[in-house]
Length: 121
Image 1 (cartoon, rainbow, N blue to C red):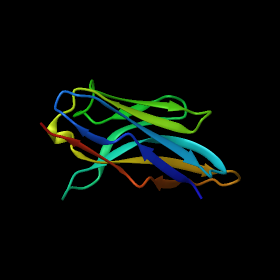
Image 2 (cartoon, one colour):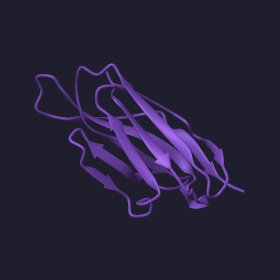
Image 3 (spheres, rainbow, N blue to C red):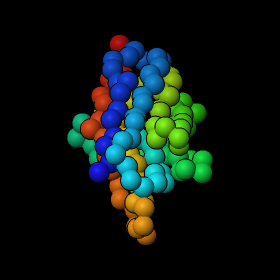
Image 4 (cartoon, one colour):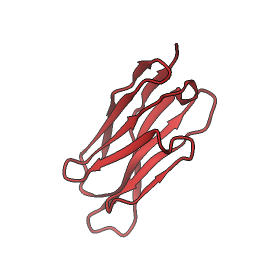
């Protein structure tokens, strides 16, 4: 029902920057929370940064000061500005959205297909 499509991943040298983007489509409700998670090979998926519709944010300590999550509620998009990238940032980055369908009291979570970020010399 809700599709999330990421873009902007790729190969970058340590200290470089990337900007990831995610666009939501097909939603019949309100996106309450939107943001990014990452999953490195052999590791569990973990939080990068999340922002609510009202603007409250929650970010991992490892990326605070380097990564910034931004939302455009009108366009149903979210971006991740990644600066001063490190090799340990290498992972697949997934867009996430928590949606409340019109007329419903519960929330559903949706994931994008992921975009790969590789930080290497």
